[in-house]
Image 1 (cartoon, one colour):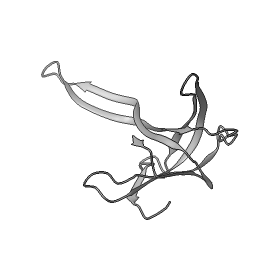
Image 2 (cartoon, one colour; image 1 turned 90 degrees about the vertical axis):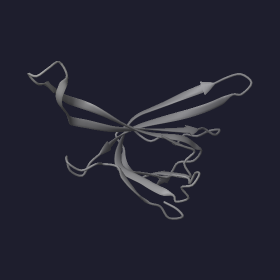
Image 3 (tube, one colour; image 1 turned 90 degrees about the horizontal axis):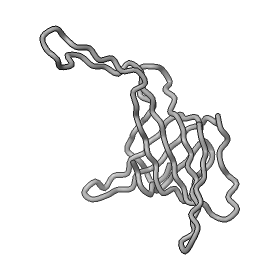
Length: 139
């Protein structure tokens, strides 16, 4: 999870006011086998996996720029250096928008957020769809 990434882009658009980007990996088919020697698992593998991404951004007045469901593009963001790690990293992947939701907080600290959900798409079934490289000054 990246809090307050310095830059986030999807396709040709730059997304402003991003407060968090979470990249999650989940097994969609897990193989677990037991041997004859005892009750403990002797083999496990993840035969199918999915990489999902959630991008949370604070909304400004009149923001109508939500991406369309099914839109595909390169999602890229930069990490900010922290602590002893002074190098920025660029994280990128081909991704498809699978959901867009909004949350409105009312009261003394009224605020609105948009969450964009995406699924990462690999160039081939045996290639990790997420690329992490040393970053430069911008995306």
